[in-house]
Amino acid sequence: MPLVGRPPSDWRDRVPRTPPWDGVLLCRPDHFDVVDVKNAFMAGQVGRIDRVRALDQWEALAATYRRVGVAVHVLDGADGLEDMVFCANPVCVLPREGGGADVVASRMNHASRRREVPHVVRWFETHGLPATSLGDDVGTIEGHGDVLVVPGRRLALGGHGGRTTRGALEALAEATGVTLVPLALVGEPFYHLDTCLAVLDEDTVLVHPPAFRGDALDVLRALFPRVLVADPAEAREHLAVNAHGLADGHVVLPAQAVRTAETLAAAGLRPLPVDVSEFHRSGGSVFCMRLDLPTRPA
Ligand code: ARG
Image (cartoon, protein in one colour):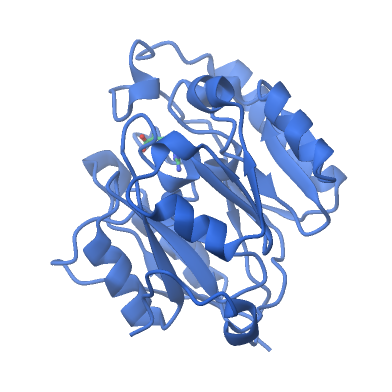
């Protein structure tokens, strides 16, 4: 059974290595909007999106990645799919030892978000990575909103109690053979694991402790020697933890997370702030706006 609770402290000797990521996928925000309230960040934001500003910010995000040598692949948005810009959610991409990845279609909670899934699945199919699906009876799972891959390892952390069910995490581990560590979440406003945890490298995580339940924090401390704590107000108000660690130590994070960036810099990491505040109105920031891509299978 690949799903494990508290992983053994020698997991580094046991969990296979995977090749580094090979670029990111971003989805154009031409159809981005807030039309309903799917999470607490969206309250009071219906109809308030400035699309011109959103596009400018999205282009600056893409430029930031290119500037530090990360290849950017672009997926077009679709009419009526207001959240599709958060393209990390409709699929789960779990890299394999020899390159390539298991791509697993999500089972989204909201009807409009369910319609995003075939678009993202098609992109992967076209790029030689056909997706599989989990059964109807497993519950819901929202891709990398709740499943965070440990960079360079065939290991993932899975949040449940927000948008993803524990049953779906079990089914994902079963279907792919990936070692998956379940972490219990309190839920709103930290409705996805990526709002309260960022796995920056195989030794370092950034966390917002109040969002976790049960033994989740102990499990994180047992797994990672460096547990950095985000500024609590920045985590709550500016999605500070929705940050993306790159292989060279850069961490792309929301520009408003000033104190959190200082913590990262003090730990020897290289913060790369970007202003995607228009997307914060929808409850998403850097991490859920990009999807890490695997190398081609050998
Ligand atoms: N409005 C989107 C939703 O509620 C935002 C998703 C952001 N994704 C994330 N992983 N935090 O589904």
